[in-house]
Length: 124
Image: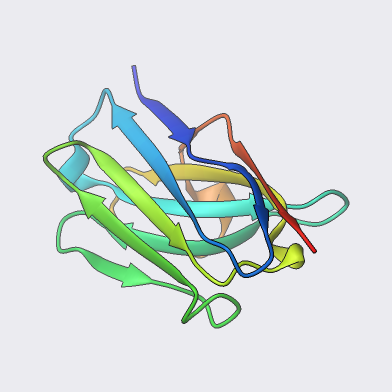
């Protein structure tokens, strides 16, 4: 059974940092791509990064580039999202998702498996 478990969310002041973790199990980690998405109340889900575990290539959109970094520890089957210089508009539920085809697709519907999400709240 494929499982993705996020952790590391919480409340932080603007300008602060958080590191989210996505612990994966039930599949061959190296074959998959893992993406991070977020969804704020009343807004569509938005991709904020992705990593292809086969070659560690990453994708970070311009909206968070320079502030968010994704990394993978294949020995621990865990993907991390380091978020720095956080802003109130980063407040959202953050999800990790797995693409078994290892592609890092842009759209959320192309990911087969999802975690339960972790809340990130950035205060002024």
